[in-house]
Length: 293
Image (cartoon, rainbow, N blue to C red):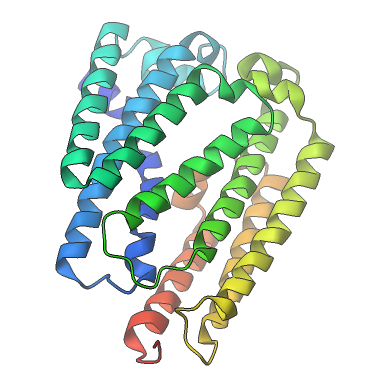
């Protein structure tokens, strides 16, 4: 039961909460101990908040998950984790994490509570609405970035990063819906009601529009944000972002992946290398090269 409980927390999806560190990194406070400590505690608390939501979502969807080729193995759907235990755990994790969030920072607590309420609405209603379901997911990523901003004293964080994060999240979200539609085929609408409002031509068009807009927005950020080097060296990171977008496009269109974006990040080596090189280049430009004014 302990193993089932741990799996119900979906630790593989905690990687999403690293977005809380975006403000820390891009405001050049990565090596400031107090800011780093606050941000890391924020990541841990947000992991607990999100795990509470995952358990609630699995409780709501347990009947549909039992008829899904992969989700039927989830602890709650399979019966490995008893429903009373899951309910108790979800309530406990939600309360502890939200109380801790307010203790850490009132602003962080408010954003964490907003995320919790939004995700509850998603679990019970919003995920059934085509397009809105993906937009809510994307907003959840924006909330993570905003949560990180509340944990430090921001001096130079660019709003462009909100735009890039939101667009990239939409891109990944529509890619996930496409993968689900292809994998589940005729039974797609049974497993996820919102899939009844999608078809492949629509999703392909949305993915194309959002991916192009994401690349354009990031390119504009690299030479127009006020906190970047005057010699536009941040533009050197554009090829990594472009390849990452193209690689993900390849995975969902050719390989048929994308149903679980967190698994792609954890398993696809070319994408891992690309993200790693992008991260290294950002650190070098922001911290190791004394060129940012």
